Length: 121
Image (tube, rainbow, N blue to C red; front, side, top):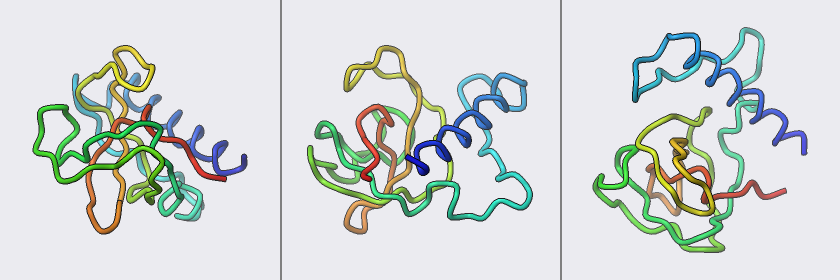
């Protein structure tokens, strides 16, 4: 639960940066970690589990080159500290969501829709 609370804080910071106008439409610069916060708090290295089978993409858009498959029920590690915004999608029960997570699944690093994963306790 503590990891989820940390993630919510990071996502909120990224969202605040986006709403505040530091990013351009369609792209958001990665949010810097707050001063004095350890890297482990950011979520990098946390384990996530696929809610549905999704393709791991080279870029944050559905028509980007597929690097591999993140199969339903498989586990991967978060390979970045923030959730980034990209092309919107309607997958895994979400409508018009634009959040993407950078994961490492068995050595394949790439982007998957954030709505299609869950943190493993």
